[in-house]
Image (cartoon, rainbow, N blue to C red; front, side):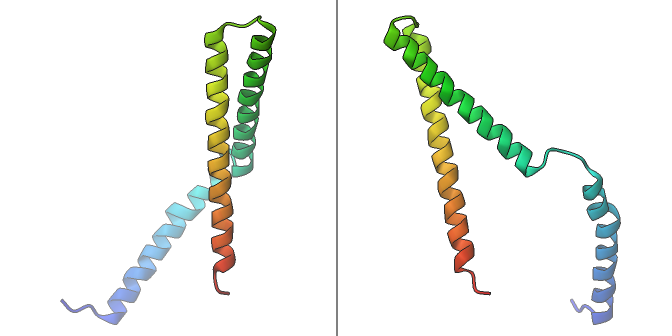
Length: 103
């Protein structure tokens, strides 16, 4: 199968024009939460989960909490902390990979 150079150029040009008209402009007008807002929400949720674990632990130390609630709150806090550490490690790894890229 032989492809002519001018035909390939026309096909790429047509694809590019379709992408600009339907794709890029449409994405620019779409509204949604940006990355900073999403990250802020996730961080606030993680902090709330960790605080709830602390509150339940203090209630248990004072003898005023149900053991099941304490275990659940502490387990959620532990999973949240592990997730945060994993995300941090991935971000650091990605940053180090970017630093290794040649300019």
